[in-house]
Image 1: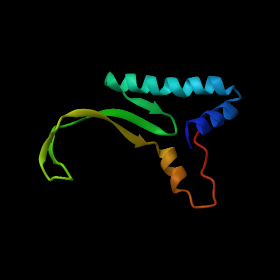
Image 2: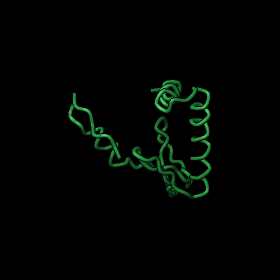
Image 3: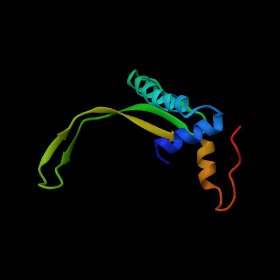
Length: 101
């Protein structure tokens, strides 16, 4: 599913226009990035959560030349799937997963 498909599905499911659904999708990304940058956690009910995790500096190797290089420390987003999403993916083929409440 690409962005256009997501916007269409959201607009249809919410009974709204594609323009409004598109604005929501765009703003969701901006809001999540700002929250994570400030050290907060973003929870998407039924999908999962994103939280910032600090990754330590480490030494790596250039795969082409084998030379050592330093990889700087950075903060990355870590995604943890919600139970509802895990259950939906674990449902046997041909059967619909139970709807999350």
